[in-house]
Length: 116
Image (cartoon, rainbow, N blue to C red; front, side, top):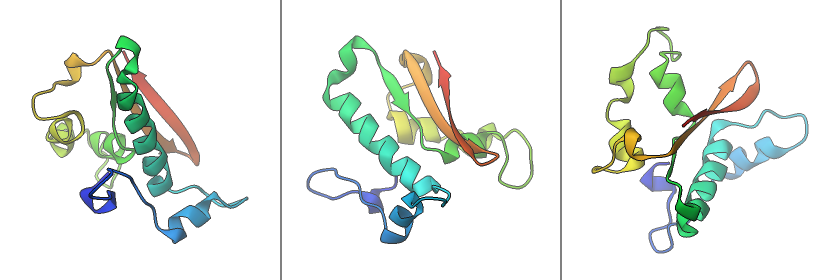
């Protein structure tokens, strides 16, 4: 999630009321809500030190950009080439992690892709 959604003091994340309203019955949950919950899970996991496993949490739009589903439908590694630094850290590689998690919305359903 972007820095604009973080509280400067306690690293807490916030969402807009309009995004939270997508949690109402019979309303599609949007990606901001999924990223909000995902960031909370990642923070909780890292605070608990993960019980010896290293897990990388990617935001939901990572797979959309990687697979080129934003419009041109082409595989887009260059679209995501800097994401590993942003999400995992400058000194980290995806190969440094035991598990990588990628949420993605497809045909109205949310999925989590797991790479281990």
